[in-house]
Image (cartoon, rainbow, N blue to C red; front, side, top):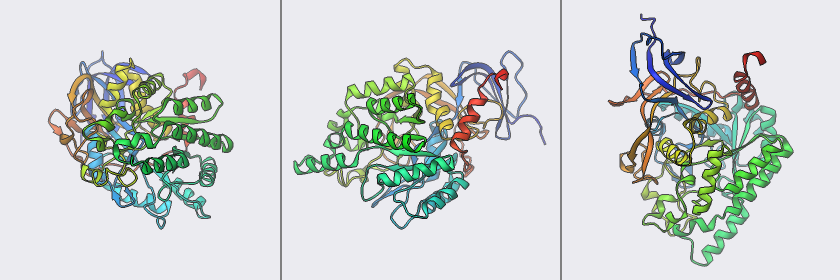
Length: 475
């Protein structure tokens, strides 16, 4: 049996969030075995890929995906095989899904174990978030079991009363448990009373169709909810992560909290830094049904500035794979239609195009696309090209431009909100756990090779990450 490396990516410009170097990347048994100086001869290997003139970045980590999600009477049309395949096509090698109870009878633990079983069909690596909707005396034990399973974060919604919403008492109690269990509170922050009242007012006025979505969920609702949640995080000492922030005001609240010593993080999504609320006056407004909705052009520009400045830590897709037939069932009433956009496959080029257009470096892109999602979510072995890390790699051309064709994507739906847009920065080669899954010959299905990733404790992982980047003299 050969003892030489499985793969070498030769003559690469290796780009991490912390800098770049010219190197040959040596891969063996799914791990990065070494980075050798590109001035030295190329090491022998079973397969060599020449990356001369190309960048190689870490495989993407998408911290916010909804796979086979059931919400009310709607179920997304994807499964793990479909979503993970699409992720790999788009340069993402790890996805983090949610175990959200489907109804009042399903417990948080059962929801996660159900998703974990479904994830055995994944082509890429998978981790999970838990979710709590209502508190009872069994929740602390269930959260302990989730931590044992490697699920170290819990999502809670501050809106969607009657389905996924958790009340303030529940959020506070779960935050206390996250402190005890070294976990991370994930928050969908929109102030439910404001949204409910605003939506009702629009319904009474006959302005409740999809073309009015952005008016029913005002920016104020998001920012007030962030402010209230940060107060609970400060009170309990819990680390908190805000999903899909869509306003600069919400991001600024998180930044101000961090200045006070609160462990708080901001995520946004590609659509919030590239699309504005004029899409609801377009020919197909149902393509853009999501919560929060798109914001005005001024807000979009200011949000993109926060992304490039580093105030926003991560870029996630919030992938939700409904199709147009589901979207079009009730375009007359935003309260009755499914919300969410397909995006796991287009996260790389949309994010890179948006960031590069605002002057960001490739290193900054890598931070939002891979490094920070891995670090904040305590995903071991991901988000960095370094010896000992998983061999999740993307040969990447920042100058390559393609026009999005929604029908030609692989996400299990029939549209993309970015259809027809010219985007730069696409994957040429994708390596997942040492396997070449995408190259010039197309996609090479690895089968159900994705692993379930046990995440570390939140603070444990942050401490280890900081230590790993200290100069040797400081250790």
